[in-house]
Length: 248
Image (cartoon, rainbow, N blue to C red; front, side, top):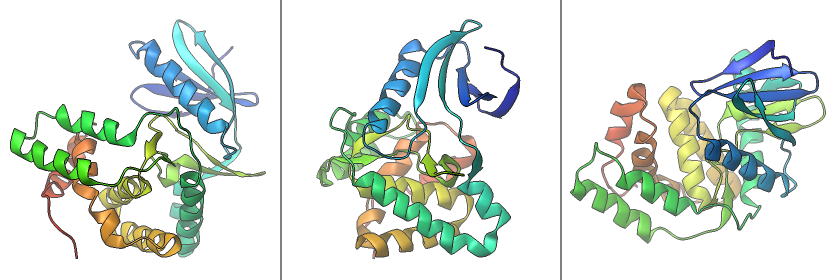
């Protein structure tokens, strides 16, 4: 397979358009287990009936692991928000409707969100044992749910195609509490644009009949787990959210 048309890249991957497929090529050093697990999680989500680009194959290209999926012609919601700021409310409403469809699914074989959060917090070197204990105690007290959670639900992972709207990047998908998933989306919005974050949270809570306070109670936990991703530009804001407080 000849890789020419690069359409996106990150620290660990490059994505190419090859005929009718999008080919995500992983850099050398990315563990085989990570690639295969990503493909497995994606396949499990395909089985829910959600609009997800179907996997064609997992392969080796020039000595590197690669995952090929259906190529979706279109723009992601992040691009559309930037191009049409007057339609922001419309796009946020669409985003929330899609997220509610995700949370309505169940995938019992996915890892538990609480376990993932606990593991991330326990491994942090930035926090002392007292702060970890406070956060882990709060995490343990939160209700246990088994809803499908995307784990990285943000506008760039929603593609508006010609035939359908697709959800991509399921690497961090788990089963757990939907409000934790919402808390992470809110946090990602807040790191870029607090006004969009508030519009998103208000819209989700209204459509889902969820108390805003309930989502906010997850924020210190989500912020701590996010520190594990080691993004220097986010650290100051995340550290401010770590205080275990009650919200009005």
